[in-house]
Length: 226
Image 1 (cartoon, rainbow, N blue to C red):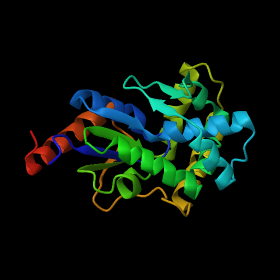
Image 2 (image 1 turned 180 degrees about the vertical axis):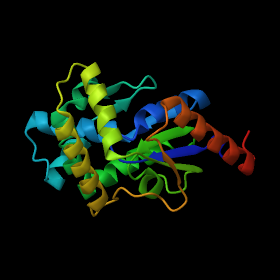
Image 3 (image 1 turned 135 degrees about the horizontal axis):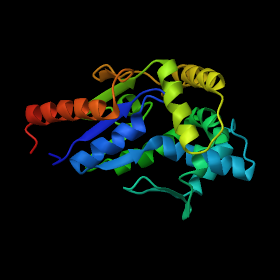
């Protein structure tokens, strides 16, 4: 039996997955795996190299030649170059859903992500972690929040980073991304049947983290993990 469990955190854009997952991992001494950053890295490289964002084979070939590294501190490296901030631009954000729909790309990403979680002790966030990537994860969380609240969070985040942003346009983009993610044929965004939903709309980050840690503690007790 694994000494540590895997925790899957899913949810739509702006639900707070990355921030919460990092803090949960830090509290438990687990490894945080940002799957969204992996897709963003490929999207960034595709844009940079003029690769068709809707072409499955071209993107998969590009991925096969791409080394993506995630550090415990949350930094992202592409072929040895740090791209942590470069993959968070509006251009990448508005294009990553197209890349994430490509079946061959998802299969390769899924394989890499499952290898990372083989020995347990990971907190992995994304949109299909509990349903496709880690269907046997011992703890599955689905974070949700209203479109208004998620747009507000992303708006404030962008302003803090110096990115000029139109709030109403941001709301429309988030709603559109929700639609794309939930309607895609391959591994769509949806809550796993055995996932626990946490509505973060009126919760602080600390409250969400504490709630998840309680759930993890209960599950560890149930399964006899120490």
